[in-house]
Amino acid sequence: MSRIETRLAELGVTLPDAPAPAANYVPFVQVGDLVHISGQISQNAAGLIKGRLGDDMEVAAGAEAAKSCAISLLAQLKKACDGDLNRVVRAVKLVGFVNSTADFVDQPKVINGASDFMVAALGDAGRHARSAVSAASLPLGVAVEIEGIFQIRTAEDHGSRR
Image (cartoon, rainbow, N blue to C red; front, side, top):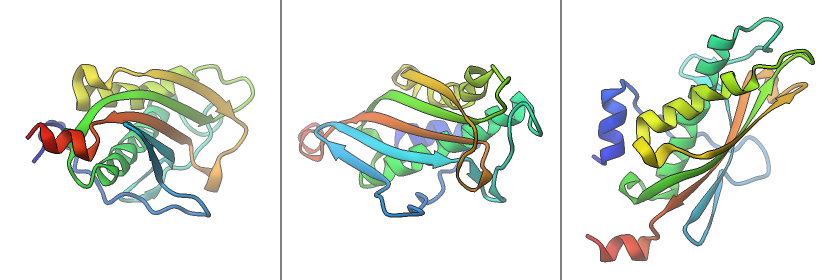
């Protein structure tokens, strides 16, 4: 078990299987030591987390939806690392989209759910650059979608450090 998975267990989180893409795209692309992960929508074991901030969803529920996106990002990252999260160097950037009304202004507070979770799971390596933007709607009516960029040790580098 990796140090990250140990920390996740302490947080009461078990990574699910990485969600499959819903259309004609790949879940992640590795370029050098960077992994670009496609947008992960808010969902959990119960299904899609739907809602619109400023309408039928409160900020705290939106932050939980963002946390679910972060969990899916880590699940995709684990797959990109061939199951070895010890290869993770750091979170580089998150871009969060919040399904919200035109007058809703707390997108950063919603995306904090993902940012806070990344720091809890990865420690200082979880600190990242970030954008938090409003969207008039998101796929399938979900509340939040987040994409991410992570730095990892390449398989060659990681193998030489064992």
